[in-house]
Amino acid sequence: MAEELISIIMPVYNVSKYVEHSIKSLMNQTYHNLEILVVDDGSTDNSYEICKSLEKEDSRIDVFRKKNGGQGSARNMALDKAHGQYICFLDSDDFVEVDYIEYLYTLLKLNDLDISVCNYKLYDENEKLIRTRTVGEGYIELNGIAAIKSMWTQGVVNIGPWCKLYRSYLWEGIKFEECFGEDLATMHLIYERAGKVGYSYEAKLNYRVRNDSSIRKFQENKLDLIQIVTDNLNFAIKYPKLVPAAKQKAASVYFHVLFQLPDVFEYSDVRKKIKNKIRKIRWDVLTDKECIRKTRIALILSYFGFNLTQKVFNTVRRNNIIF
Image (cartoon, rainbow, N blue to C red; front, side, top):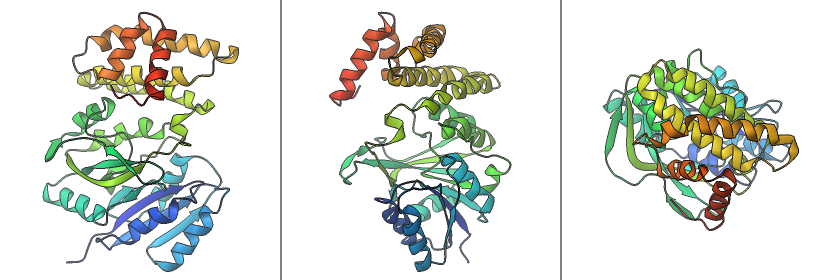
């Protein structure tokens, strides 16, 4: 029986150091019927040239180039061009095991899933293993709403679109928000459509933790996250069981942005608004038995002052302490 077509979407931006390894990890997959859609989002290094060179080596690769618009817009361009019965995503600085696609496909078909999800490992920039994201073994099945809850509370389902295989119909009419935090703004809409989501503790994707990653430093567009979690809180009203998870995720995001804001007058009003948002929900989150430890500690410390809270977390970060 012929293999079904799987479309793999890869946004690329200034990753000349990593992109060849990433694409070749797809070229070498044990599952062969692939459509590898690579979208260069206006790179200023030689990432595009590397991708075009690999395109010549493998007819399954199609490389496109567009004006810089962010990771969400690059993924959206590829979604418009995808022909597969299934959709998969990979970031251009990550790499996957040789049976990554076959494993996710088999998991999905055997369990009649809408989305199959696997675990992943974290590596540093020199490909030294840091840790496996989630410790455990076996298989878990969730409905779509439970998957959203897991995603918002740092459960087994991570917030990114990668390390997953989707039936393509889930993406019909849905596009990534073209903002910072596009995953947080979009993924719950996909899970809402899913009947069955299956998660395996088997790690088949390798996530590269980069020191220059946008996650680790402040950018003006990071303020988009505040509106995103507000929208998610409104979305959760439709599903009351999701409200505590939405509040917990909002608290986590508020602290993340607050701790990265430059301590200058320009952001004083923003800082004040974020602190007020934390005060508004902190008791609800603290009394949620499922609140994760890191968020709980931050909320408790906030009663003694946000400056103290930030000092503690800066110390934790500098010393690589894990809560």
